[in-house]
Image (tube, rainbow, N blue to C red; front, top):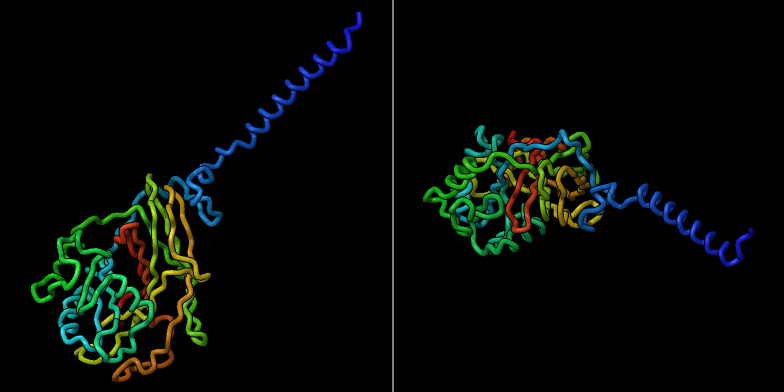
Length: 310
């Protein structure tokens, strides 16, 4: 007997609903949002430029420390203070764990050609109003040394370096400078480079900010300094080649982020009191330093390339 029209319609609708449910289940199974862990993290990490690292990359790398000193042409005490850092530049201690850089900043009315807007801004951000100053890894608190006006005459510069070398020697944050891709455009006066931050640990690295420094690899001859040993910052970058901050809101375990940087390097002419033996500047005249710092400004790790006086 033929089913009534209403009954046939109900059976047809039931079958259609069943097929629709099955199709939806298959579709969801094949397109689940959780098949890519990186995309399901915090929205700040949904960055197409993040790279997933293989499980074999998990581990630690040697940790380097950054000792920053601040001085100026007009600072009478600066030569004696910064001379305390000379052993850490020339000795084997430096490549083992400490990178020393020197910033020139305003002091009185004496002109100092090594001052750049970026280095002055960094000094001002630290709140320094007197010279000399020295800071290890962004804060001296971890080393039991005063934050400002470090007493170099009583050995606090040396103590900073010694305590840093005795502190943690490993880090899960690795910084890699693409040394093969470094370009120094002598016509435009620009250094271009890329570096990669790699989280090799099992935990989120948290918020990170980066600084890139181009330092003079050739010693400068400047007033009141008895010997041309000082390694000077020529330019400091905190933004990438597009002008965006060199920063990450977070970096998940076993992921990496690559940054490209372009820095304007002014001519060396006129910056030396007595011209050293030099011709046209080349890339070999510069060293590069990349520093990564956490949310509280503490330096987590440092990478350096060709950082040694000649």
